[in-house]
Image (tube, rainbow, N blue to C red):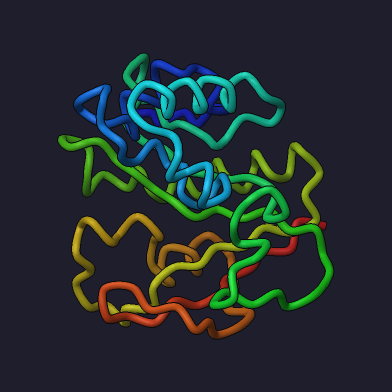
Length: 190
């Protein structure tokens, strides 16, 4: 298996990984941190897909996708923090004035979990941010100390995955997910 990570500019592939099973559904598409809460609540059904289609056409697109050959197998949301709700989040601190990028959501398709795809996605997100001249990149994973994280809450990643990619803990946060504290992990790209 050779995993390639590419910019998430193909809407159909993004929809395959993070789109709802029913097009009229008002969930996911990884928009909750990417757009403001009022817009997120207002977008229903196909309007959510249309919004993501537009994001995929932007430069930079909303994240990266992992491929096993021609098959899309995973997603990571990565973008400048200033363009996300993390810019205003009271539970996730700003540690300085650096124009950091954030990576905040991982999704691996069923049938491909347990194959290390998240590691490829995080490496790809770092390279994507570097290619766009980001000075640093942050993530906000759970610090689960090896404890089991519920699959529905594992989208933020774990501290260990970020450490394996070279990130270091930069701060504690006031955020808790699935009973585990979230930490701010950072990697300098300069």
